Length: 223
Image 1 (cartoon, helix red, strand yellow):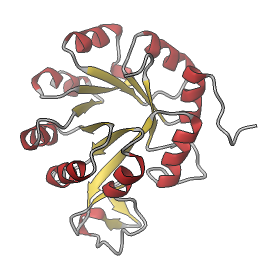
Image 2: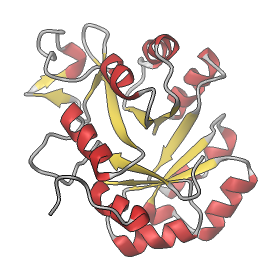
Image 3: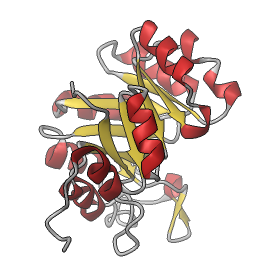
Image 4: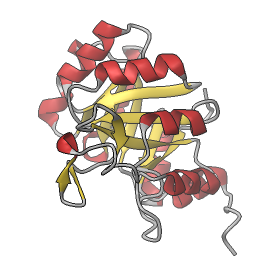
């Protein structure tokens, strides 16, 4: 899709401490810096919604037990799809089991142009594919023990922590006709190196640096 890696902000613009991660403002900032899209986290609320949040608790309340009223300040998956689905790349990470049917229903109602549904949990990946063969899915790997399983899973994307990335892995994943994303890459030299290895996507806490590295541009709010 791109002659360079897809540039994604991790939870939006996570390195910017002036805005909350996984928020509409953070997502907008990553795009303003020049990224092609962003990664964000989804959890299942007590009222059955897919809400955007990384941690299992919000304001001390377990999200799995929280009411819609308690979570009204959090974006929902439908909000993200409505605002961004037609125009940017979305990497939606499912943090827990039990969201698969809700996510697939939302995707059918508002199908994004470019996206992947990812998870650390192999059962989630399997369930997504069992429910819809058309949904592009990815397995996230942080440890070698997780990485060895990717060949046995029905995935289109392999999303690896930077500590696992090698040129050989890039070659093997591409030979299997899969795409490879790497996270979380926050320094310019590593961005350039992985770009030279022809990874398909780079996820960074610092989307401003990521865009500068590959696009040589500044955002409108920079001097």
